[in-house]
Image (cartoon, rainbow, N blue to C red; front, side):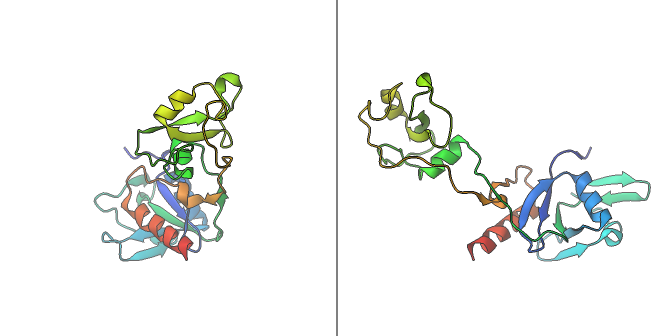
Length: 201
């Protein structure tokens, strides 16, 4: 059965840049209302067709396509749509996660600057949690596990650790950089890569 509540449709702006993920029902409603076009991609990814509702509703359902049954017959569910009214790229805050803190530090220990492979580091509260330290961008750093254990519930100064700069909140980033193709939809990869190449220009 097709899951109509999972966010399995990628939305592009008028510049063909990825902006968000939405549910199939919302995507079909947007195409029907004329505020978006469905993007039909050829199996080899070399041909893209931008279709309004009348043409979209006539598409055949191919092997591997998801579909929904309506009173007018079976309708193919798009994997990608393009907004006809939106041409901006929204910036969003970088999610606070261990992986993003590690990336902020350049995959190195904040205190020793030693490069760390996955699993060799851990998050550390610069101002210890036991003494009221908060889990924020400004107080959390990524450091070597051994250094973290040695520091314990002390401040870096108390533990004799070198601090070259104060940790800060990363600048906002384009929304498409936070979109992860967790459903493994091939069409998404094509447009996420296109968005990245456009951003670099």
